[in-house]
Image (tube, rainbow, N blue to C red; front, side, top):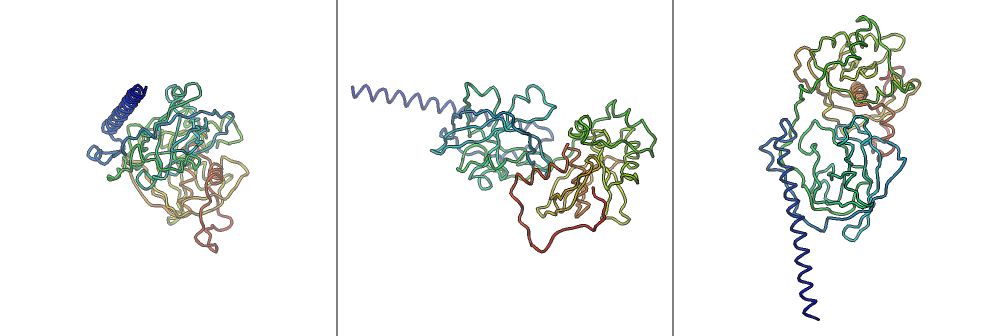
Length: 410
């Protein structure tokens, strides 16, 4: 009987080793495919010569768990902050209950609530994590694990932390990577999956081939009036208007013929004496293209200037709080926390050449407000984000940034 038990134990060990070997081979193949994909991404997040700096922790089967899925119904949509200072809209989809290293965890996974997804994209769920290796041996803004709705079988799903990977923002600027909410912090070291990227960070050039022309609807709207004729400003009180205001806009071709007429009509709108402002974004007049007007209080004469395909590629850690309103949100003003300084990228409207500049103070606030519009973000969303995050520390209780009474607000 004793010998039978020994033989059975050896057989079970061999079976376990075989399963572990299969999992290890699967992870190795997964990593090879990931590196291959990064190498083949022309104009992507990482240069081919820097692939060598993408490294992984050793495979460990102890970090594979089976989680029980608790579906969440009627969850409200919320905006998850992204690496570029904007945000994306998600809903909590389910809680994953699992045991790891003797500890029990309940971690949420999310679904993207964008109205413009393919059927394949809508199958993906978003599972970001942070753990005790975050910022040390793994990427400081957390890692992602791919999960799909059809991975869930009979209320269970397999989670392999060996497949945790870095978002593109770990390698390059110019991407919008959602940052894991504090609910997704796992109070445990997870030394598996992808390590922190140690190579030089890429600075992503704008892909001007992705720029679009105006749609037929937009062309008709632009041509509906003369160059000095103001346009209707969309209002959040209208459901139809709100759909356009909440839609992410596209880059526009800098040399498209109707762009000049659009910018002139936008200028007539933002400087209208009856409803003047200090900034205006194209979505506010029904055009989902990346065009904005901003009053430059940091320049002599406080002149208005327009910007084609603006992007904020850096934001200071120093924040300022100030009152904001919006031409599209009637009868509402609130204190909003913004970055004191930003680095802005945009196109020269005559040559299409990319330009960069640092903007500070109140003008930086106007740029942030208007660029938010291009992503379908309204200033009340910023108040919601602040409520959900830890409050920032004030550097000095006796100092606050402010603007003079009576200053026109963005």
